[in-house]
Image 1 (cartoon, one colour):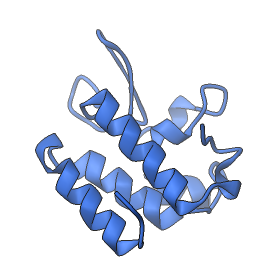
Image 2 (cartoon, one colour):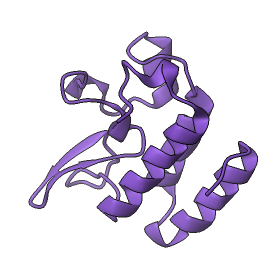
Image 3 (cartoon, one colour):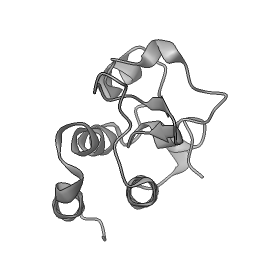
Length: 117
């Protein structure tokens, strides 16, 4: 499993695969009760994680990061800059597109980054 600690050693394909597998397995976005996207969202079904959140191990996570996008975490040195653009694009799919559009969006990202879906 890729975490912030191991992210610099991961390939773009590995990062993409972990995010896609996580989102498809989870089947829904990680949102607060008010509908805001979260790295981690506590729900009655358990803890949901967003596209970028699935790359953050429990011992690496900070609630202070909520309402902060991935590039800001990188700029503030909370996350490594490895695969920043890919993770941000995947975060955008989670945050801005309906679940019904995820598969098409994954294909688009795969093509954009020369990855396999």
